[in-house]
Amino acid sequence: MLAVACYGVSAVYSVLLWRRGFREDNRVLYGVLAVGAAFHTLAMMMRGFSLDRCPINNLFEASMFIAWTIVTSYLVAGLFRRLRFLGAFASPLLFAIGVFALFPVLDHRGPKPEFTHGWESLHAAMILLAYGAFGLGAVTALMYLSQEHDLKFDRARAVLALMPPIQRLERVTSGLLVAGFSFLTIGLLVGAWWLKRERGYYVSDDPKIVWSALVWAAYLGLLFFRGNSGFRARRFAWGVIGTFAFVLLTFWGTNLPSPIHHP
Image 1 (cartoon, rainbow, N blue to C red):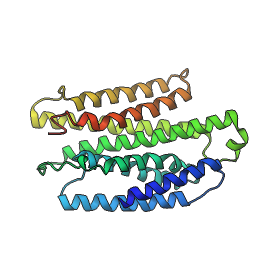
Image 2 (image 1 turned 180 degrees about the horizontal axis):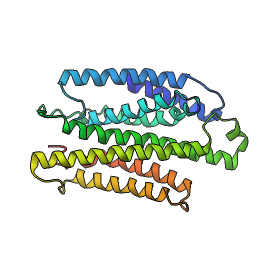
Image 3 (image 1 turned 90 degrees about the vertical axis):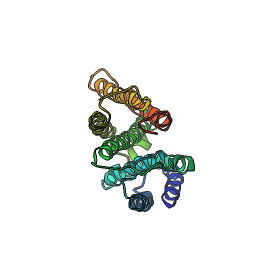
């Protein structure tokens, strides 16, 4: 709750940065998100030690992990001054995920899992790291669209703003998608191997597995079309944002009817 409160403060402060057009290198936002990330990390550690397992086994824990991946990735990127204002776009997303995760119904306590190996945890961790990378990529794509808009309609504001050049934002977005797609591919392969080991088959018609395959295909399509020189960067940015919005809106819902992921 303390972490979510910090994310809420940063989201409100982000509105001021948007109105100023990012004309000053203000470290306050970075500091507030760093404090929130510290509380967030402590909460995840306490959760893991109290349950004696990796805290990624229900929707509450998955939401916490995705948000934690986004905020820690931002803190690393924010070490570079020209990328620090990613936080102004990431803060509302972190706050929204945090508020949603606090709904008690998401924290379903099932039987304690018996881990004879770490493959199931590795599968979940890779998948959630992928979604974190996709989330930060969507944030960068939003920055790209904002900068492109300013270049078209308010050139002075774009010149005075401290956001990175539009070409760099495009490269960062593509790089985050490649990283996220790599994590997602590894996670799905590990999951298929674990499913074969535990249940005797590689794939099934489980709703979550079908959904994961669709998400994987969607991001593969984005990367493929991005490699096409005729595919406009603006469309790519909207595709990144739209695909991640789809992931956010359907991630939790597809878990509920899944016998494997929500027994």
